[in-house]
Image (cartoon, rainbow, N blue to C red; front, side, top):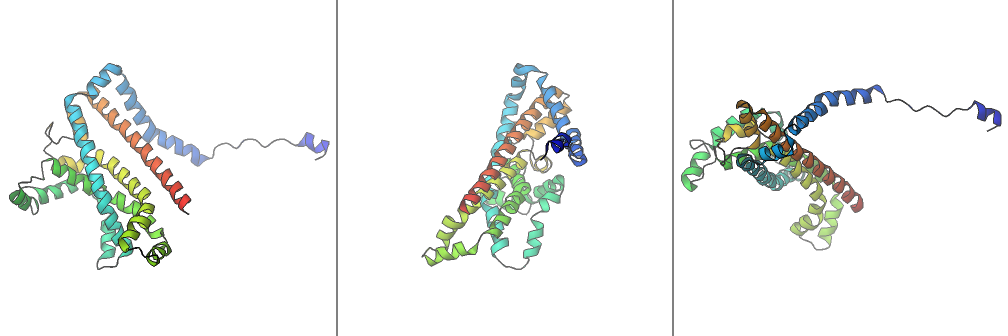
Length: 283
């Protein structure tokens, strides 16, 4: 480049953000970040001591145990049976397969209150399943902790299925065939070849289902007795605090749930990154 051209040349100006970028930040700021930030600031107004006192009352701790503990049980159940359902949809052919594949997403579309009513009708002491379980084993499902677990399993099942299904479809059959040629049984091939490749997707689906189950309200409130220290969940406690005009306590407990949700989101992202690296190393 000649000196004359150097004098005339100017570095290109930095491109300003495009309008979709600006609209995205504005929209998410108004819909997502501003309300959540306002709730955290409202919770911080009570001070650290007040926050800790309201967040750790015996009633609140009891609801944390119910919500977090039963959500963990529900997510683990879905981790097992969700894998079985995904395997059936991908590797098997049977009558009604397309219908079943469509119905898997029903908990996403069905109003949660309707799901709660349906589960209560089936699992109550005079319901189709609740009555024989109660008479044969003395097990009360509806209006007890087992009913809460059933509702959480219902609304979180699609997460595991839809997370595992595409990964299972992308697996190469040549690896399984090579395992069979080396003398491995179908069970050994599944446990040592297929399952390790599905593990990141299974963990990601379980984590997503767990986060969804912890925050569930509509279906759980219908099938639960909502009795403190028994089967009262944290979202229901927040509603009760609002009905009692105890806005500070409701905000503090809501902030605890928000912090937990952010931690769950972090865990999900870490699992997804680990899964991508695992699949990349395997490739």
